[in-house]
Image 1 (cartoon, helix red, strand yellow):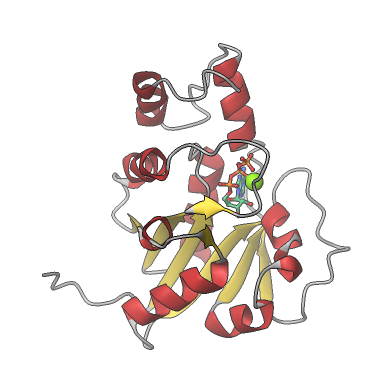
Image 2 (image 1 turned 180 degrees about the vertical axis):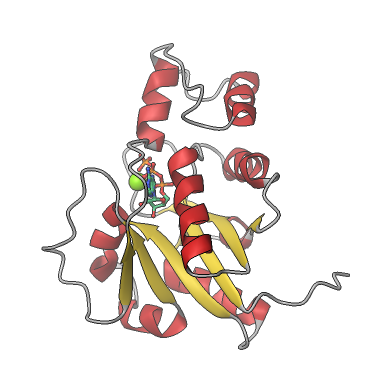
Length: 201
Ligand code: ATP
Ligand code: MG
């Protein structure tokens, strides 16, 4: 259907996005700019294997919030590859699926925050990960990467304007009846209210 050609340089922003917030959007926008990416695709996770201990919001809500938050940006898009795949999400599967979808002419840049990057060596098939994509690690307030031992030359670190926003904090605020205006896009505040999300932490 689409007559638009495949992006040559595609950013991939994986996340739970429960909810998506301005930290995610600023990180994606910065990396898009500095790495001259044609597009950044946001990929909400299916059932996140590293987030045990709390109920993650249904994938469809997280997907819709991601669509709402990114809709106004012509170079942002959202993919369902992870939420439509059964079972827990592994980044290696995300990248394999996107590679298959976009073809070999598209270079993938996996965008990740410093906290997630710190766990990278615990990810499944982490050797293959570095063959599938360049990794761009965004510094995030409160996360020091110097001791992580990332493989040399495989990861580029980018300093993103300090936005000390996390989804956890947004959820806690909603549960505590505190405002999340301006931490997330307006449409996300409204979607959360409309669906009654996060009322109980
Ligand atoms: P939670 O608090 O539930 O862990 P989160 O805010 O970390 O949520 P995720 O969906 O887990 O959000 O994050 C998706 C990706 O975005 C991860 O790579 C994470 O490191 C990155 N990220 C999250 N918040 C920020 C931020 N404020 N600045 C830069 N990167 C961020
Ligand atoms: Mg997180």
